[in-house]
Image 1: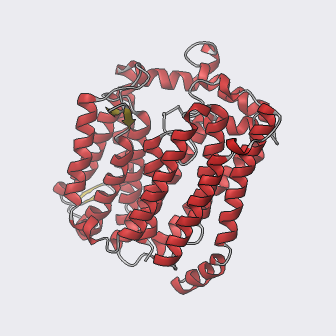
Image 2 (image 1 turned 90 degrees about the vertical axis):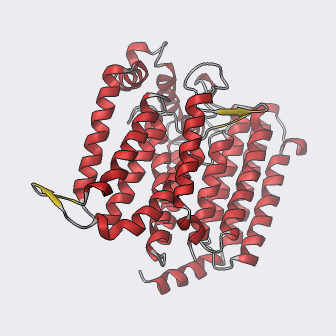
Length: 426
């Protein structure tokens, strides 16, 4: 499809954008009404105010985009609005005490999306200061290693705290790394595609330019071993390998990277208890169904209870799963909305990935292409990883489901990704 064809298709969809936004807001409102009817036998206006606030914020966001960026992608905001609205409903269902916070983070995230999407008129600022973004990311990592805490008091210390508020530095760190890699790979592509060394069928560039592979491997292993953050380690390295492959088109780099990651993961399994525990629980959760594997076993039982159509919103028992509002919200969706509901969520994420791919394909510069591609891969891979982990298809990693899981850091990061995609699509 040519760029002209894409623009024509967008113009056709754009006429439906306000309708889609209205449907997303209506869905959120109906979710709150349903919860009120199930839990209290009636739906009071005082309890659906979050849906009304969210609807007003969406209307304001759409007007701002229409005013400043009339040619923006017409599906990004409606899909994001629907997913975040579903997240509000699920937090109300699973952890009602956190609803106000989740709404606040969603509103701040929407503001961040507009600020980035409308404020970045020229992406040269991002490209020019790539080493500044790299230094900022490494500084965040260092601060977490030195001063990291866990709000729960136990477990991996992946948060930084300030005045009673906590955030995960790995969330902005992912965005900073993608910006750096997009700039670096776009500039060094001619050198990376050159051949100086050849080992069998694999061609390698000058050794200094192999540095990013080793740097990202070391970075991922540090997250895996020291911080016990399996999810971030996997996402960082997988996104990096994807961006590297589309830049140079040589499978040798990917095989080298996967080999290094496999070696590091194997060593981690042998030497570190927390890595071995995740893998053992994944391979045989039923051996400790009431112990260390309780979460994943309850997750599987929730999906089984949901069946094809689900128990109905507010009528399941997903709260048996520990930390369900954050780590296992997809399992709660499976129990209460069933297979059809989870497939609908999967389709929404697939549509976001498709729109991100369109932006990457039609971007006018290599930097914009790589930036959009990296952001899209991160979004899709993160969603797929937590979905697969909840279904015991892969080991649990602790990453959140974008826009739906409870968490301020994740919400701000996910909306900022959408803002960067809007800014890239010019």
